[in-house]
Image 1 (cartoon, helix red, strand yellow):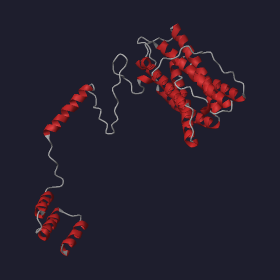
Image 2 (cartoon, helix red, strand yellow):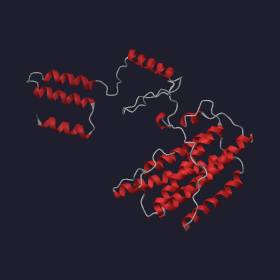
Image 3 (tube, one colour):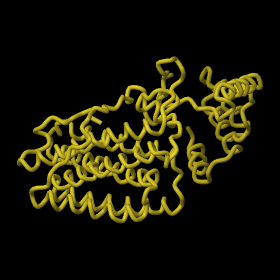
Amino acid sequence: MSQGVLRYLARSFVNGGNRDGGRYLLGTFEAEFGRWNGVSCGVIYARRMLSSSATEPAPIDKEKKGSAIAEEEEEKKKNGGGAVVPSSYWGISRPKITKEDGTEWPWNCFMPWETYRADLSIDLKKHHVPKTFADKFAYHTVKLLRVPTDIFFQRRYGCRAMMLETVAAVPGMVGGMLLHLRSLRKFEHSGGWIKALLEEAENERMHLMTMVELVKPKWYERLLVLTVQGVFFNAYFVLYLLSPKLAHRVVGYLEEEAIHSYTEYLKDLNSGAIENVPAPAIAIDYWRLPKDATLKDVITVIRADEAHHRDVNHFASDIHFQGRKLKDSPAPLGYH
């Protein structure tokens, strides 16, 4: 290759290159190397490619475009006229899930295998008698926290329950998170307690999702929830770091108060002070209630859940008070 070609090639790269320069360069190549068979054809083809505009759009296949539009319209009809759900590039898609009666499963927040029937035979009157200083501190702290709740909500048990669940769903998440981090640091198993506490948090959150269907919170109640959650989360986080046994004991007494509140709720339902409306669909599916279930049935199963949470947290606290670790005692998995 001549030195002139090399110089022009360098100048072309410095100046950003252009189509005319490309033609000149290819022409020079053709003159230099045209004596070899097949090179001229390749150069001519390359010259034609360079002569076309780089920004010229590719022709659109109208038949393919029309077919794609038709498929999109058909998909919209299947989705009731809503937006088309895009197929996942990552291969993640939800399989078709149905109920026992063959109808499509309507919920994304929980699946049929996560539903259950509450154990209504549980003893609701159990109480941990405070004996040690830590027990008494936890008991009286919970009793003190009840005072402003009683003043603010009085006998508006729907709103009270909604507020209660926004707090009750925090301890399980905090405890599970801290045990998870401890397991990672210590390279040790948790004995199933991470899952047990996260199950508790999820169960409490489902209580809240049910209550929201029944009670529409006002703006100031939402603001109160935001404030209480922010304070309680941080306070419980620090408490669990300092003393897990005290933290679980506090939750045990909180659940005892929750049982009392739901019992009072049921009294007002039975007396007619609160209307016994039909149960929300989410509650019927989550607790496998009959289709004609009412609010009374929902409050009954929620109260049973709270009794199970009471037992789990008092049990966890007792393990710590005995000088053992949670991982040394099997966790009550699936024990709502």
